[in-house]
Length: 199
Length: 168
Image (cartoon, rainbow over all chains, first blue to last red; front, side, top):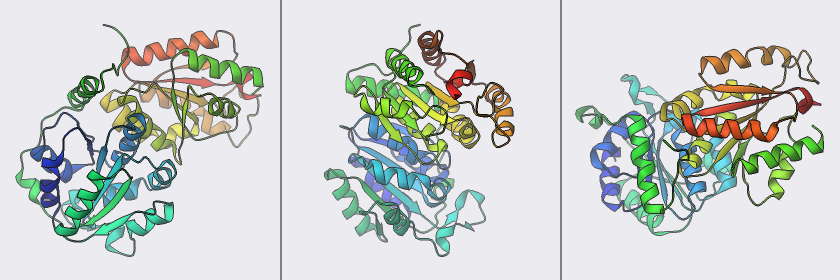
């Protein structure tokens, strides 16, 4: 199973859900598959899950999907304990675990290539429903259940390292442009202003 | 901090429209926590690291919450990365409520805090985060409102550093 195939299954299922991406490959792949205004292409390591938790708390009636990676989750492990205790029911977290820091381009292994199991760590933090999928059929099953359900989900997707994203033209969406696109979309769909202040 | 000052601080946050507070508790301003918890106007979000106080706060702010982040000044060191990579890079209005341990006017200052306190203001300057040091409750409500107005005008984090009477 590679990440691009998982994201290809997820992209057509997005209606009014908000999607927060982590860095590098998955950001590039997701931006090529989805130009939805509810995408927030965070793209820095160890930050997407926190931003997604904040969005889920701020918009409890809205489904928030976070696309994370093993290296990124490992950088901000405190997120797991906080997520467990807050438990936002509208949050779905997919952790694409390829066991390498792929941005290094030398396949430098992460801790999950060794003894570390992110699903067990999440469970230990208190996310009892954390689960692992290892093939595309299992991913599709868990994705359906998560999108149709009303519970928080934490799904670790064990994937092969892939360089698909290196063949894709990167989005030129600037972070500020992305923010305003995202916030204006929320303002339209939530029917209320987000930012204060007048020009 | 005296109860009356804690009440004044919480009332000021409420008056300025703050409705969500991410926090990692510390020693100087902690008396505000039970007051915030008892007031339904506030959503309190306890975190395990100041780093995620920023990311979670930023997500909530982009969802339309008026966010304060309550941390010890040493937490600014911990949260530098997320202040730059999320709050600054995306331009997110956040009010930093910071216990200014180790500052000259910290009434409980000692060798544990003094060194950490010494780098706080240069750090905020390096991060281009505007800040004000408050030592008394005089004009507290106005100071908070000024900071909130500024964070919305800039769409960036703005910090209030609490020393002096707030550290008794």
